[in-house]
Length: 530
Image 1 (tube, helix red, strand yellow):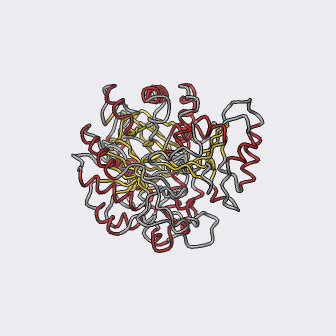
Image 2 (spheres, rainbow, N blue to C red):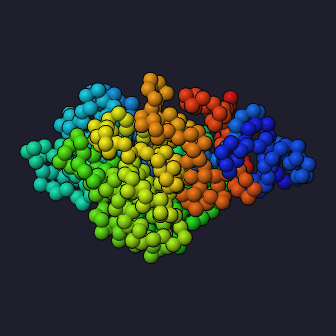
Image 3 (cartoon, rainbow, N blue to C red):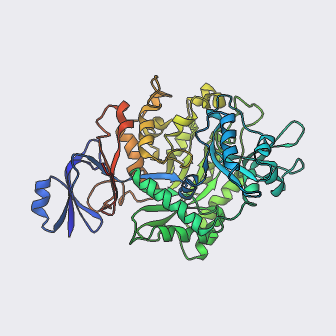
């Protein structure tokens, strides 16, 4: 027995502008799309009618790159993202510290000095004054930098004599003393001495993330979480527990960090589906850091800090070896590469060790000079883009990169016109896990309140191109373009239902669109009370 979805505008995403008035589904799949009258005549097994009440339905939106457990954690921890000055951040920390007992960790998330009027990064002495008896660890919005006080630094064995770890930097004063500001792999030195997160805590975080994502119209997400908690087995078990097929429908594609690849293989799993809700994705590799902390690896030095060109998390040769490791396990790779030199190394690795029948992924690809775009277009690769970065990185990113380099950055339109496959994501909790914010950013390239044409307006996407990132693009990223991303016979019946037509409203009104329903496997997982 099946369900007829009707009384709304239903976009198939098979080609631009194509829409139908009804869809018939059975057993979690689309059987046929067309007119309500024709479908009622042809299908006699209709058991249920779902009235869309004039709303607009798309294939289910999928976030192609985020960190679901970390997203949930930010909802359970001190959120510093709203701080607009170093002083305001200190006041938030004082309030949190007052609730702690001596020795208890003060952990915060999401601070961003680029949002501060003084753009000042706190020093360890200031954190010592706030919490002299508590270890403090505060993760920057990019999650490639953090602040630590003297207690936590001492627990991690970090002092003026500690050498920088491979792929990381302990930022120091001219005297050589550590400042408490840690970059990339240096952050891990403190993370290793923090108390292990329990399964119950992971479960609570993941549940919150899934509930929020469904509310935001997401039917799935490609997430990277398996290397940051007590063990691969524990984290994977939490995903299995939370995403029980009989209780909740949500599609989670789990990227596998290269350090836990053996753990996955030892449990008997390989790339591909585990069940209807869970699949294993590509092997994740970090090539560099982020622009915010100046750890993205660039071909030329940063314009606002000429002594550095960023940080290579892996050397060129190590990156090549890791891609070879994935190939030996018959896995595609997903390489985090923000800077142009990191991207160059990633492309070289993919050219040296070609994929066999599977698509690789490059995550972020924020700086894409023409010579690298030409090489990308020849590879079986999908780029995981974050349109929301335009909103958070401008205008300060111009100081980092300079105008010349900026012209080949955040170049989503150029990439699509060069026939490079792209998918859309948030990198949550770095950016809000809301595909409508991403679509708005891709189309308008500015905040709704901004009074300008948009940052690098020549790179604006059409609404159809922007929606494609989160539908057909995300499906292609995991080799499931014949299963997800379209409303077409044989495809999964995953739908995102909105109160307005994203493809025909004025671009400046996209920010006002709201989710009215999220459907996975032909079943509502979220329905707006309105």
